[in-house]
Length: 211
Image (cartoon, rainbow, N blue to C red; front, top):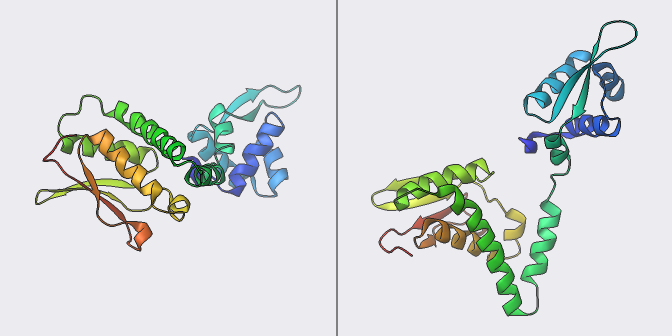
């Protein structure tokens, strides 16, 4: 949802936050566009929970709708973690002490695994866990699908979720593979990888041996 915000949406949210609310006409004056264009954006932002309306009485004339940024809208305004993620990951992978570096990566891996493991409570077989995990990760922004064919179980990522981190090396790929192993409780091997020039990443899940 938040990733669909464009610069106009952000401008509206920033203005509403800065002014503690505004009506349609004030937003028209701010952006220099028609009321119809503003109403379309307002309707979309309100339907996604980023803004809320409040009917405000006036001394003269009809009441007007005043729009304010919600807590979710404030979260969306601050949701730009890419540069911070790159800086933090670069600091981890370049840390001089190998034991500390590996411990930090393990903490990242365990935190991610625990996040998804909690959502899979009650799943039985590896195949069931694969299907539910794909759904949960997709809801979190991962373009992941689960497939099984001729005894081969595959989790396929149609786009790399960490392209800038993968450019630094395959450490983030290994972390993701190990997260999948922890959550699924089965060995996971790489098939194809985006960083090797393939159009998608594939993880092959082995079901003969339970971890």
